[in-house]
Length: 283
Length: 263
Ligand SMILES: Nc1ncnc2c1ncn2[C@@H]1O[C@H](COP(=O)(O)OP(=O)(O)OP(=O)(O)O)[C@@H](O)[C@H]1O
Ligand SMILES: [Mg+2]
Image 1: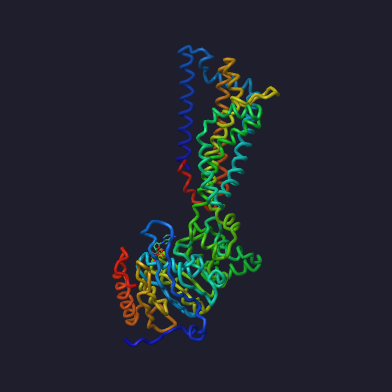
Image 2: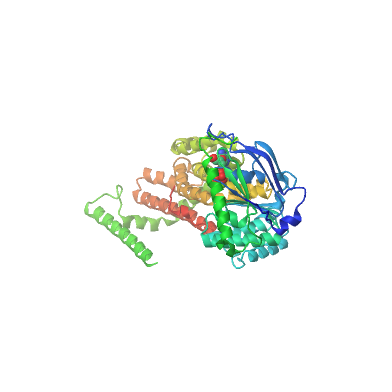
């Protein structure tokens, strides 16, 4: 198969010597629990994500996608290997990263505006700046009228938008998204995917995106990293052969179907070598 | 709204029927007043001795309120410490359960012996019975914060104090109020038990518990009933105070999922 390298303009223009996210031989093993859980969760993961890329992690449940994302965020330390974000250790690079979780994880005792401003508040940003940024973010995600509402008054899709606004308010360069839209219906999910792409184009983000959905992975990504489980390892890295910018109509194109079929096949292969008993592992 | 009103009316009807039955039976069966006075006699003594009844009521109210307030403050402080240092929690948490299992009736005389009689030791006894539910519920609320929320705070390089006061404490508010609700019910019981032993005061006026022992000894059964009635009303008031506080602080954001579970 001839692989035409397709990447976003921003990725091409921003390419530099230092990858935005660099994983070198990452392994992770949890000390807690019984012998069963003490087996490596991740084994020898190496991956470099360039500035402006959208890379999705796709793989069976339990293959360590969330764990990997947390390692990149500096929330977990790897057992072996090195991680660099923009050339420095993740814990020192948190200002340039935002993490978006599967559920909105809003603080129910805060209004929407207070939730969006959480990060700025924790970082002691000045009040006028805070108000201005919050208002701008709420406009960005189409919730300018919901600032005074409490999370319990919002629909699932709106909550997710608040969560996105909260992640964007301190202007990250890197977005780590752990199945952010998994709990939403398809229409909302597609719409938010398009918004992510639009914002990605405007703000020149680098995105590391975890998903269970092949269609979502193909639609969003420059590259899809297919993981196998037990232990979690990279089974395949697939460059998505679709032009940029991605348009919603592309979802109906034969090219999209072909890419989705290819990634589905890779995912099935990866799942087949993912034995829960840990036997027959690749390495 | 309408079914609620009907329900309240029906409850009142039940009460009225019960009072009527009580009055009729005491009259028909010629029950002596010192064994079981009728409701009319009790109502009469409430009227005639209202000022001393109200004074006792007020003394017990103060003791229970001081004990409850102190248990809330101390309980929150201890829970915050428990949430922050896990080893300390592991070490000391079992002893807070002891607080709950120790028979207060048995240690009340001891406290009287150590602290002397008066409102201080009564409030202290109320404090002791109120403390365990506050600590148990608040600690649980503080430590049961979703891991992702903690991660979220860490992504912003939050300090431990920020995690504690901007995340764990607000998250624990509903649990804290469950504790307050339980404790507000037993604060009055604790105060009255305390007064049974330690309630006499040199000024000559004791709280409800003290007056109950006194009325009992004097075979003033009418007044005894009035005192029991006052104690019940006081317990109700405290309980509703707890519910009101919970509503006041939480209704805006909380689904009051816990409203049903009495815990
Ligand atoms: N704190 C922990 N302690 C022990 N084991 C853990 C811990 N966190 C995760 N694991 C284990 O690591 C493995 C990978 O977990 P992880 O959540 O990263 O998987 P995932 O790929 O995100 O799965 P899913 O698709 O279901 O979200 C699982 O087997 C899980 O049980
Ligand atoms: Mg996961």
